[in-house]
Length: 103
DNA sequence: AGATTGACTGCAT
DNA sequence: CATGCAGCCAATC
Image (cartoon, rainbow, N blue to C red; front, side):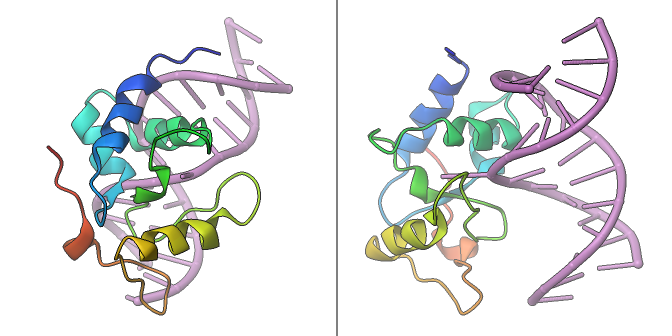
């Protein structure tokens, strides 16, 4: 498969600075013409070997969505905490404080 | 070609 | 504040 449509989405995710996070809807809005589902689907296509910080992409609740395989949630949350993002007891980040407003 | 599913979002309950 | 339902586009069966 060669979903070139994912290319811009990956680009946007790559632009997210460390210590910041973006929601699927936010990215979809930045890319334009794409929806949250698209971003999520594109993200699932991102290989772990990629330079794309897919861990900075979270859902609108500020929580981390479970990936297809393995316990990606714990790993992703750990990576985000390593970047300075704190999670509350509910496992949700403060989007009002960490949400990346984009370029 | 039609139906189902998916790392989602927003509003209603 | 947690849960439920409907809408969105693309990929897969």
